[in-house]
Length: 213
Length: 101
Image (cartoon, rainbow over all chains, first blue to last red):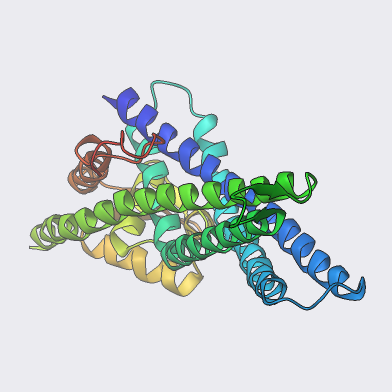
């Protein structure tokens, strides 16, 4: 039984650690892409290219993406720090894990979740918004490098060089939306545990009251 | 444990488990990571419940969990283990294939 709970606990910790780590990596990527898009928009203007509505929109979305990427990293590192400590402690456990050690780990994780509930909710929101920003950037870039002729019905590719950046923007968008999905799942599972704890506390109060008589 | 947010019941449990062997006030406060005033309040509460006993040897006081604390520790452990026993946990799986949380 202990091993089952231990392995479940370790699995959850590892899964959450992996997603948070992905958040940090893709947060950095998001910032890099946002800078790339901002710079290319500005360079286009100084290069004598006309100020198009699409270019202004791209620059605006990129700036939002940069801000989201930055907060994305700051929030992720905060969560990652605590998870890493708990994970390192769990790794050092030798099976069979004594009840108190395992319960101590669970208490630590719950306390960490409780402390960062707001941050996790913000991360879900930031990541979803970031995902949509990069999805928009990817789509806009795709529109920019394709031109469609209505009369002849042909599609022309303007530059092969733009394809990788558009695909990467789409990849960042997909990963950030997937991360939000997993973060929501993690949050749901721990919210449920929190509500069970609140109900269970009544039993602990009764034990304490009974013992004081 | 760090300064993460714990409930009073979690702190009681932690003190009691730590005090299975006699501990000094300083070591309890250090282990549970709270200030002396808060630590004193928790310890006094547990002594008043008969869960913790104080032994004074010379100038040094040590605290030890009593037999009565066993029921609280056992109940707490059972309740927290149940969280992983009965509640569907978080799994990394493909969207659409995940069991309901």
